[in-house]
Image (tube, rainbow, N blue to C red):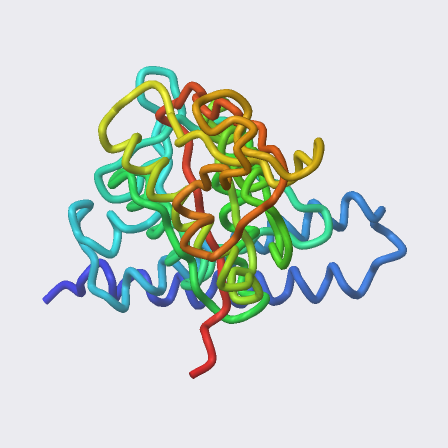
Length: 288
């Protein structure tokens, strides 16, 4: 009786593992013979091959023998279709643009980075923001950056938003919407609750517009708390002008109990909304 393809592949993978171990040992034993750049190239190549070996071991362990199997379809795969390189995961396909190269920390495909890819793809397809949660230094931010680079997407990063304003956050979302870029809000666990509320409001507005397939993102006019232009008075223009009445406050700010006794500027926040715009959030697991 002939053995299965998986059984025949195991000895080959074991031999490949021994060859990779020998190659890594040879690289580290002769640093004086290899330039730093060449050593980096070889190291990145070996790292990638080790990732492929681990993937093959995973597929064998799961007894994958058909392209339609979930454990294969859930991998980030590359195909040449009509002369174009396409990256596929599940039933989704994206035109591949650039290879991500980090000269300090080579990108490594691991089970953790694969989970991040799953979250990103499902977010893009469902038009809902993705929250990527995982321990520190497991590649969350690097994976998002690598995927954006592979798809040729510009990416804005907002790291540890401990203090900011509604208008600053709005500017980030305006730039993301108008350019069709990705916005990465990193380290959500250190963001104060008041700022989280603002982020939530902006996220709901943006993704409701994306799911409705509208071409313009229109936030409500908002009071500018930074416009300290004079003594306390009512809104500029209108029936309450000069009467000392409090200026109207955006609902997101009102819920936080924030008020200003200065004349506000009412700024238009209507911007184009490109369908490629997305927002991703990373966080460490919250402590109970």
